[in-house]
Image 1 (cartoon, one colour):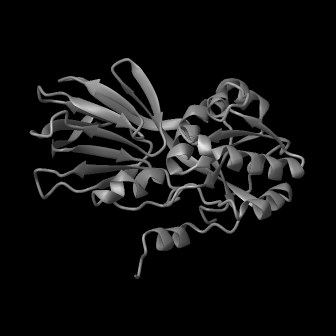
Image 2 (tube, one colour; image 1 turned 180 degrees about the vertical axis):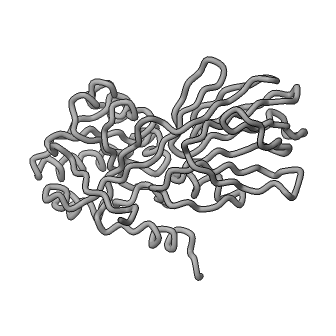
Image 3 (tube, one colour; image 1 turned 60 degrees about the vertical axis):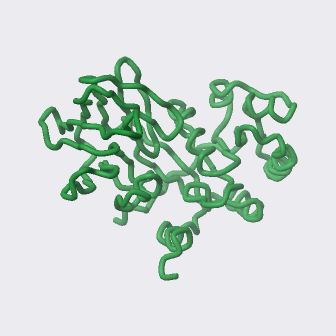
Length: 288
């Protein structure tokens, strides 16, 4: 059976919660248009409170919103959707991304496509992708990541040394600007820009990619996701850990970052016509 076959559908399509791109009050008219389109299809729309405050309307705190709705709608670009997926992850709500950005690896539905998609949604003509998430810990802080975890040097004037273990056994020492631990979904993000491989997003695997390594023998590594990976900062400068480009933690010498696959997956709603390889071809301009 092909990995992309997925027959999951929403149990109910009565209520949706909307989260808008932050610091974008100009999205009020877009929100009202989206609300009108969904309500015309008998789908009630509720607005998350930070988004509501931004456009001078009333809304619901995210936790309350997630308990009230059948699915969530992210309005913006891939960064907005990334934030929505992470914040709503524990509530197990599928997320639909409406793309107002430019690249759109994750958000594939444009405003022009929305009326037809809502019709398809009502007729169960769509798909839900289940994407691997990563959970990790640094010091006493626990986190989840959808795209990647970056371990980076604190100072631009020096390199960082990181000892790496798989299931408690040493396998490598990285010396350079840092290391990216990416999910398959995040393989087209920072990982790609430093020469890491593209991995099909429904795969379960870790991609470990060194950033500007001191040794030319250091190469990206793809491994099954049933390992636990640990990275220990071995020099005295410490490091910073950046989760999905949104949360930052400082790590000192001899402290470690532990990473493993999350027990649940993120769920993303897509058009049935969406083809990942066509997206790659279009966004990366392959063959041009």
